[in-house]
Every structure is written in C-alpha cells, then in structure tokens.
Amino acid sequence: MTRAREWQVSLDFKARLDEDAAFDLMEALGRYGASVAVDPGHTGGGLTLAVDAPDGETALDKALTLLEKNMPGAMPKEEREPLTLPIW
Image (cartoon, rainbow, N blue to C red; front, side, top):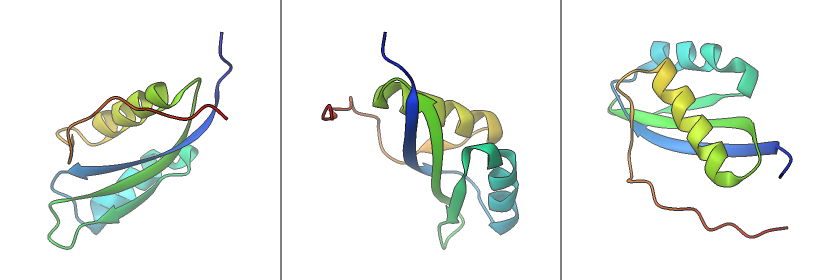
C-alpha cells in the first residue's frame, strides 16, 4: 500500500466567479492552503490547493471533489486526461 503524501493541485474551472465568491472559496478550503484567481470576465478562475493522497490521480480526484462541493456547478475548463507521473 502506498503511503499518502501531500500534493499541490491546480485546477482551472468555469463558473460565475467574482472576488467575493473567490474569498468565500478560499475561506471554505483554507485548511488546504487554497488560493483562488478570478478570470477577468468573471467566467471562472483557478484554484490551487494541497491535498494528502497516495498518488497524483487520487489527489486530482480529491481536488475536484472539494471544488464541486464548495462551488456547485463549477466545471473544469479542460476535459480530464489520465495522468502520467514520474516516480521519484
């Protein structure tokens, strides 16, 4: 079994997002060290956070779940593709 380690995950997403909503999202995800950037047109943004997971695929799943739970209706900007990560 692989031990969990901390992963930094960045997601670009589509949603109605203004500065107040961005601060609310950062507050809700504060325990994950979240930072949020707002697109100039308020049509989405970027989310970066740290999650514990045994691998990158699980880390991405956790990050997407946290985004969806805390910002219903938010969708990733790009279709998800399988990750290929080097083993260090």
